[in-house]
Length: 239
Length: 397
Image (cartoon, rainbow over all chains, first blue to last red; front, top):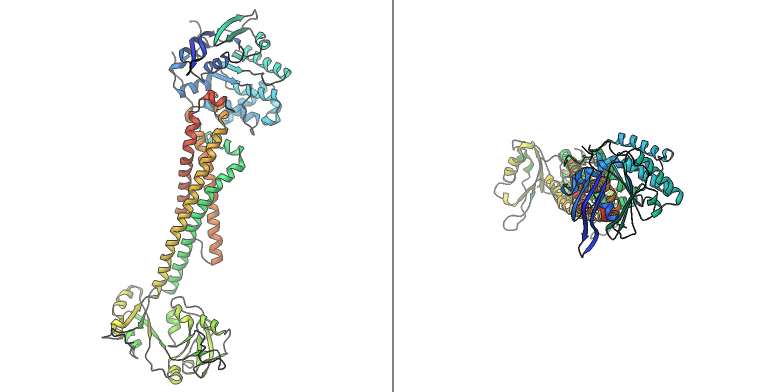
């Protein structure tokens, strides 16, 4: 049996009242272990793509399957459970809780997966080590640089070992050096088996990734792969 | 297609932790909005505590003074004629079975002045009465200075002053003299306030024999006091007037002085209700404050809500988070208020010399009211928070 793709969009359409079409019949399959960029100018529908792939939003038409689940048939609470267990998010503006230290911020990534507090903190410390921030564990967000904040956010996204990591302009608010480190971490994460999807308007970043899905006006205009070998594609599908 | 997703339940501890996140981040606002609730609860707890303390004190005083004292006072008969009690009224009352003590006082016609240089028209607002020497023990009164009338003193031109009488005459120690009509009378004692019969506080008392000898008193008592066993007070009351003055019992007013004290406890209740009402209004305003804070909190924290949704929080989890926050906020106010109210009760009771009573039901009621307010105030904001669409929430500014 071939493993189920991590993301499968078939004829996904998202339109808003007033005839605005954010997505027009998008077909996209992302296999386990891929590292891809969804790239396009602002207004191209790539943010809508992120919301739909992340099950934060449902398409008005077409089907979306994430981690083997048909999203349209799931209630809000089941969708929430799906996000809690299988999807990690990294946002351009980090969305860290002010006044709480890095460990607590990362540990929140496991809160809704039903992991007890002690275990959450233990795994948060591990995840912080994974993004090379052990020395910043007890720092609050306003004591961290932008790059460090984004690494905390990445740790929060990966602490639950999701099958899919969605990064929305992860380097958009960072300087070049910090951005490079963040991209390096995403590559490492992918190398360890996680499917990573980076949403970006930055062609340079897109070109550094093995697969590039280009959007314009809600449609895929190109889907290219470079010769870079893809990560493991056949293991651990369907939990 | 798999369909095995079940959202995890948060442990109670996590629910509290998450609920407290918003409170820890905005302490000043938390204090201010909890303050409203605190004031309301403190008012209610203090009002109930003070009224209970004062009632308890009154009851203790009643217990000490006894509720078995009855007075029978000469009034007027049907034709408006002032009736006179028989000279042997006390002896007749003593013959009623359950009566243990009986004694009497009598109005006498004597004007009281501080000294003979004060013109006779200028009396001091003090009246003279003849008193039997067992009056003080029957009323349970105590002497503040000097001594009460004794068998020798009751025949002599000496007087014992009630506390107000002494004050009005400006007498602070025994041995001083006052004028009763044209007779110089020596003050031998000053009484402490008589709680059961405060009218005697304004009186200068002389013995019956002295009154007859010096002030033309005819020996007819005006008021008879008696104490019976507690169980038979009503029985004695029924026959008292008839026993004293058969035939003209309609002109005799029988009363139970302790009833006046008990009535005081009852009149306090009206004031207590009013104050409780004020406390309830304060509580209501506090609740509106909490609701307002929660609405603002939800507005400000849309991004956090969006993030939590992306981390896997269900709508129910978001609702529970803000409901918990609202409950914690009002519980904080409620607990502070209960403490303040209890402290106020203890402080005030101490100043008054009462034993402080804070009824547990007032604390429990305050807590229940607090939680109710927390739920009511938090429900609407919490529902609004849970209905925010995750993508809208994440992109909110």
